[in-house]
Amino acid sequence: MAKGFSSDRMGIIRGSAAALALAAVVLAAGYVWLPLGPLGLNPEIGLGERIAFALKADILMFLWLAGCVGAVSRGRFYSPADIRGSAFGEPSPAIAVRAAVLQNSLEQTVLAFGAHLTPAALLRGTELVLIPLLVALFLVGRMAFAFGYAKRASSRAFGMALTGASIIASYGIMVGLIVAGR
Image 1: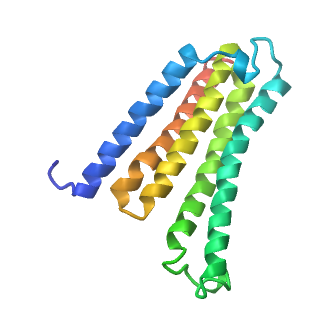
Image 2: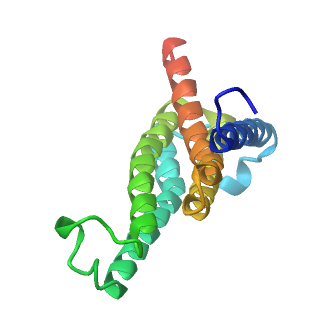
């Protein structure tokens, strides 16, 4: 263990490194091997069709977010301490994890939505396969984050880093393309 790092911090580093490696492998392999045909893509589609493609892919992210809202709502319904709503106090332990996952998922969804819509405007042809790959990484990351949240920080690190890696990768690619003049 590195000097001064707790086991949780080392777990966060390990989980984050694994997530970054997985994101790199998925994006690279998917870019090289994922065929356009089954995704309804062709090299000649216009801007409107590319935007529509990204919106269709992102519906899965919004379904995840809706599921998180539903989980908090169900938790509030069955928790006498929480039924009045968030304006009347902090969440009880019965829904605290659900509320935290919802809040974080909302934040990540907003960032990811922009990170998927911008590529739709800039990517061409086979490059568009990156969008569903980014959505898949987002969803796997969110699930891992949600399942690990209640355990400890190191247990949710992989999910958080995988979600973040897909967003950061997308923004990085887009900034690079804009600087390159696309």
